[in-house]
Image (cartoon, rainbow, N blue to C red; front, side, top):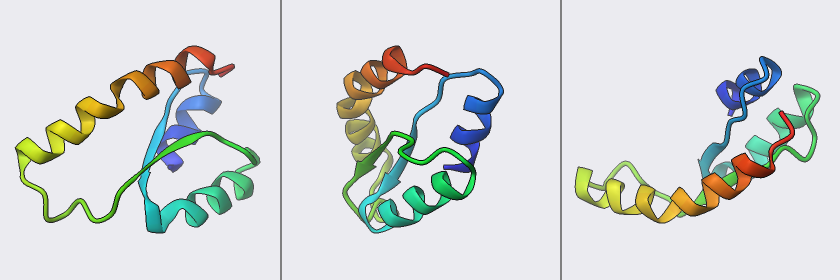
Length: 75
């Protein structure tokens, strides 16, 4: 989350991806870094037990949403 916020501050549009249990933490971090309402994607938890193929499949399903958010980013 912080990496995405720092990229945004540097003028580089970015999207953070967090798992469901970390949504509130992501929102709190964005607020504490002066970016309340910062958009990010939430994915099902857990991911640590997924193999490479499963992770790739999840990432593939996020591409459209990531692109949409990046195109709408004001930086």
